[in-house]
Image (cartoon, rainbow, N blue to C red; front, side, top):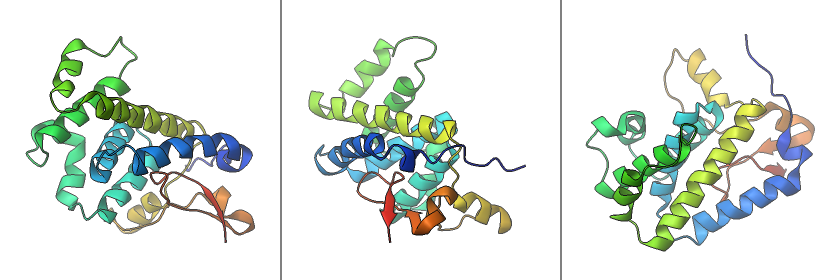
Amino acid sequence: MSEEQRLNYAKISPEGLGAMRVVEHYLNAGSGLSPVLLELVRLRASLVNGCEFCIGLHRRELTKHNEPESRVGAVAGWRESDAFTATERAALAWTEAVTNVQDGHVPEEAFAAVREHFPDKELVDLTLAIASINAWNRMAIAFRAKWRGAAVRAAAGGADVDEVPVNRSLSEDGERAVVGDDGGKVSVDEG
């Protein structure tokens, strides 16, 4: 049974989502963190949180950055993979530590490890990126945003396909979901 989207949150609160996109714009255009590193972090947090929409979206963003499927697919099991640099591994570990705070605070060991790879400003911006994707994940999960690529993959017998995100409720009245410089988050584009 397919669950329908509960609310069209981008349309209901464009100002609120616009504020979230301002943060994403800063991260993408002003933080100095590499676009691939940002997308790896966004994908890892989305996998931890089980956000179908964001998993599909950030897999797509990584392929737009010419990341091979072997690396994209390895994000789920990054600890067992040799596909990532030491800096990327530190960022992925930090992503998990910051995302999984439900059982306590971020461990000192995790902080010490990430500090070896990121100066203070980059570490703050990296943590802002993690906080931001966790907020996006929670919006998409709470309101059941759907990634069309999942349905297309199922119809294709599980084959991975290159699909753009489509939020059915955003498709009404000529509006569509788009991927922009906001980190690939849902925005409404009239067109």
